[in-house]
Image 1 (cartoon, protein in one colour):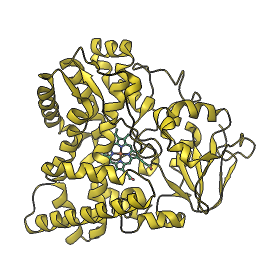
Image 2: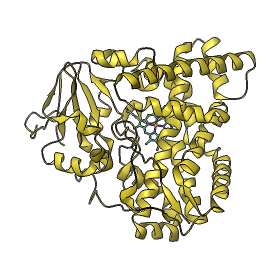
Image 3: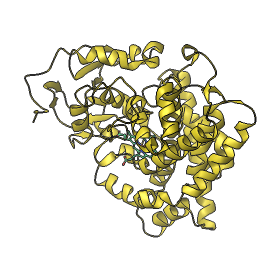
Image 4: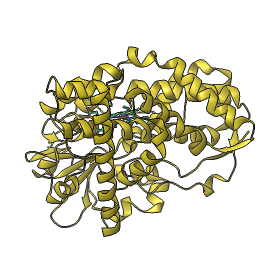
Length: 412
Ligand code: HEM
């Protein structure tokens, strides 16, 4: 087996300018650039502002190892000052599952893991199907739609709101909050906007928690309030952080699994036809969409708690390490002909849901939603087609966190 720490194969790391990773050309097609970088090695330093040492891992083997390496911590306390400042007072960044390490992480994850098992999630199937059908009913009569706004967004947000017990009527607010929080720009205006959103989120959830405390219901918010008040299993800031994370992670990602997956099909008509003829291929196709153009690209921040090496490249203590899940999905060392979309591929070992203790809690829910969404869309809108030239599509500029389109115009 390869030695992931091996010192002899550093390749020829290339310093990546941070601006480039946020540029429109890279956002549109990161995979071509990853292909070029791959020739030079699996790990590359990123040019962050002075004082921040940062590395990007782009291959499957070292990416997988890094995601489950206990020396790479999630807690921002281990990171550069810049990140500690970013986290200050931000319930989306601090004290949630994605910013804690064991044992805090273990305690927090245990509180919610039961609600997200494949079996529990399967019980939501009829309701997810009903929401899916209703959204398609509304679209079908019109003959055209923005598949993101009219379908891919409302489906997962409605499901996660119902699961948590958060009023779905407030979802327009959630959408604005979430879009603001997943845009990682550091200019003064963005920082101000993020602060305002954080204050709004804290106020919103504090209010909801007080309501459920006074009048508990049979929902996850009430269960977490009880766990906090009676069993002292989590603090109120941790409770707010948990709800914020579940709400955001519960929809920002699935929207783009549906959007990016549909775009892949609409631009590969042979694959679309195959799925229409053999709908039993849909579960495997969803895994292929996750590998081929998954919704989470580089949102895998970790911080080195000691000096270490990845593929021979020295990573000093305090460095930030990101694994590109998108690049790992296109690694020819892990997948044959990786740039081809093949819905019959056996590609379940992709890293699109992460790996290790932070493996996506919502994976069973995302898979179920996507299987129902693709199955129903292809059955009910058999002549669905892109309603613009592919070059006209615009990608959202927050590629480091979610990879997704601004809009996906379709006709049928
Ligand atoms: C964690 C991807 C849907 C909740 C993660 C991670 C990835 C990911 C890559 C790990 C990040 C890391 O290790 O740094 C995705 C994708 C989704 C999706 C691609 C959809 C296609 C969902 C949904 C939920 C969810 C529907 C709903 C609750 C979470 C949570 C974590 C997480 C709570 C943190 C787990 C932990 O740290 O223990 N997700 N996710 N995700 N995801 Fe998802």
